[in-house]
Image 1: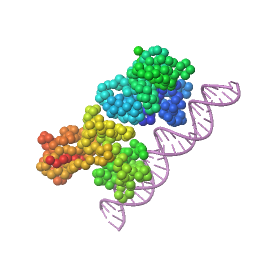
Image 2: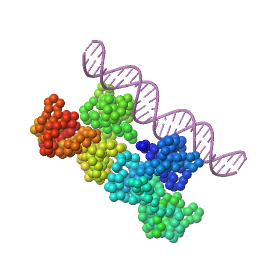
Image 3: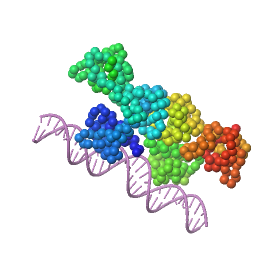
Image 4: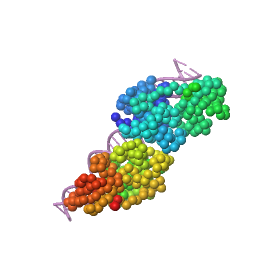
Length: 219
Length: 219
DNA sequence: AAATAAAATTAGTCATAACTAATAATTATG
DNA sequence: CATAATTATTAGTTATGACTAATTTTATTT
């Protein structure tokens, strides 16, 4: 059963929202896709008819088994293309999201595998997110939010939970790349902002909005 | 001015038909795109409003300057992606057309140049067709049809004028690849079929339909 | 619990790009 | 040259996937 460009984007959004443990409501999907809740309802009906999701007013949307396989396949292709763009074409990691967003929809039975092999079967994309395997399973790595790290603890950046250019640009400005070592010096109770050092550099203050979007591995 | 997937396909088809010196009629375009003449007329109106083409009932469609630049840009991307698929991902030259047909529509300002550099600035795609430059100009090479080669002349395959899987499969079967040396032994006046040898191998008889789709360089 | 706010839903519209069927214009052929 | 065949064109329809506006349902406050 072939899926349209649009259907694939919905499946991907539902997967990501579901994983973030949000209730996958029409509003949430509309926000993620930057469109209208009315449009979302229409599409949820279509996806349900195709048995790619189940949708219940109170519980929200859930991917069916077939739906999850399809979502992971798209995410796999997205992340493989990101690796290609950064490793082979020398794009910056903050530039590749929109292009991968287009490339992920290229359909061909052999493409993902051939690309995967060409890239040396990478485990992570340039943002540190794990690349689902050809078996349709997402590998799991224990990551916790930077905002949950206690004062005086040290950790390193494992991945980021946002791909907006504004966010990535800010990361670059802070020199906060993948693997950067972070020490938490202070935590403000009022707004949860943090004072940290990055790779032993100057002290920087970062907001809770920031630290909620960075996943780290504890030392 | 951004173009839709569909508009790009029409521009490409109009370019190719125009180059083949056919009258670029709605019927011809409909045949090339495997759709309906009525649909073509609708689109020709849209393209004319956007000043990408001119269309005249008796003379047919012609690309405007902007239209030709756009067409060559798509063809450039198509052919670069074909090189990528064959050289880097180890696809066969007969397998890449449909994938490149999708990849050519990826939009990004830097992509074609970065891909071009990564591939080592190739001059030809895997079918032997020249790759337009970033200046929007198509390089010209003197090629003539195999059907125009005289008896006892020798030539080599420069490129092919058909990308259908059936045609490419037949070429493979004949071991008739790019650069293959062809000697014309006989020419049948009745149906223009030819008896040839390929790379000094066995004698083969090929139809005029075949020899009209193979461009060769004379020795 | 009533009032208010937010979210979900329905109904109707629009743009894109295809289609079919009917008609007009052209080109070919007897 | 008249008729047949082929093309071009118009009109009307369909599917996809978005939209707005109005309404209903659910949540949150006071």
